[in-house]
Length: 127
Ligand SMILES: [Zn+2]
Image 1: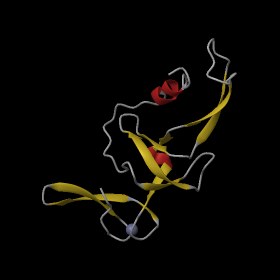
Image 2: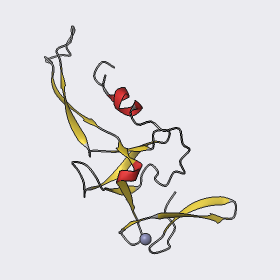
Image 3: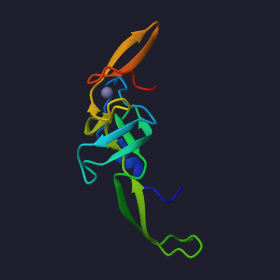
């Protein structure tokens, strides 16, 4: 995997050991609040729970210049690749599937299951 040498560096930065209650899960629709894609919505592709970050497919893309490798791939001579940079969870807001608004997430118990719900419309958020 010589293509993404910087990714680990980004993932390691601003690492926090605090245990987060995961308000955001894979598959959630979220709105980006900060950064170059601020205001856009996307679907969470990955949650990096320990880092408190989420990866949103197709958003927060950054171009990286790749130097020519000793053994370039076919037709490759270095160039520019786009990688998805994880966003801090605090920089995204969940978009409720019920009321379609950005919302804060609450937690409640249904039986023994802890479920998330929208604080605006009160609807449960799909798990
Ligand atoms: Zn709602």
